[in-house]
Image 1: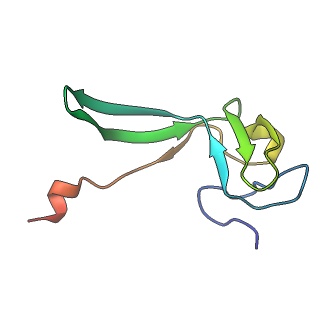
Image 2 (image 1 turned 90 degrees about the horizontal axis):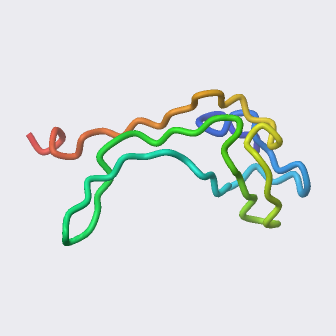
Length: 83
């Protein structure tokens, strides 16, 4: 089934899979001596490296056909949901 959300338009050029995909993205983490937790959004662009989970084909996001220039996934602040 074609992707309609954050992977809209993406499909593996080798096997035709709609994902999932492993994408190298930028993200900020808060790190202390005990570990790390994500503290920001996840962002990638057309030049980010991408791999198909199904066939392991690799390339850049634009090669997978995504309309993802400057794409960002926003995460809700979990503490704000506790209130």
